[in-house]
Image (cartoon, rainbow, N blue to C red; front, side):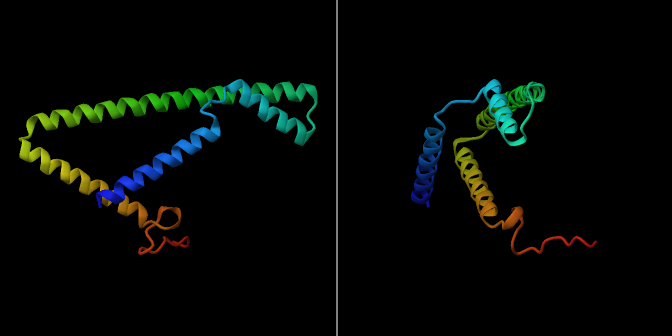
Length: 137
């Protein structure tokens, strides 16, 4: 089982690395994104110069909002990760060495159950053994 897990991690890491190389590891800043979106709309909709300026301003505003929201989410996730780690350290400080080993194995079993649960889900995250809710209720 451990060998399969190691292989899966290596395959996943390879995939992530390939995606990062394709994107060039660079973020598109809001100005570039707004410019690109405005050019596409200008081309497809034949916008006038006035419309182009107005649309560009709207795209820029939206791109800046999205970037700020993304940064906020990233900070929140990092904060939550640090809190989880501190919690785990506090729990570990209370447990005996034998209990720590048992606790670690229980955590691994829970991770496996979560993975299995995800694999068993069908379209739209539904479990294929359970019928989808009907729309005529």
